[in-house]
Image (cartoon, rainbow, N blue to C red):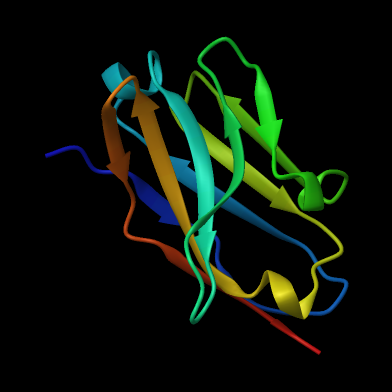
Length: 115
């Protein structure tokens, strides 16, 4: 069983910042594309951002400029820095590891942005 361990969620006011972390097993982290998705109440899960093992990043268009994904290969950890947070960013954020047809998910971490 592959475990992706997320941390860093919480409650923040509008305009604030949070940094999410996701630790993965080293054998997974070194090969897989790591990413973040989110799911707001009553909505489908959506892509936030991904970063490949080579460091190439991808973002949802609506989040470019506010969110930054990064990975620390020594710690086998992927981060999501979220700035200028808005109430509509409120959601459960899930860490994801993907390689071709194999996908693993974290348990999710709640992010709540108060107005």
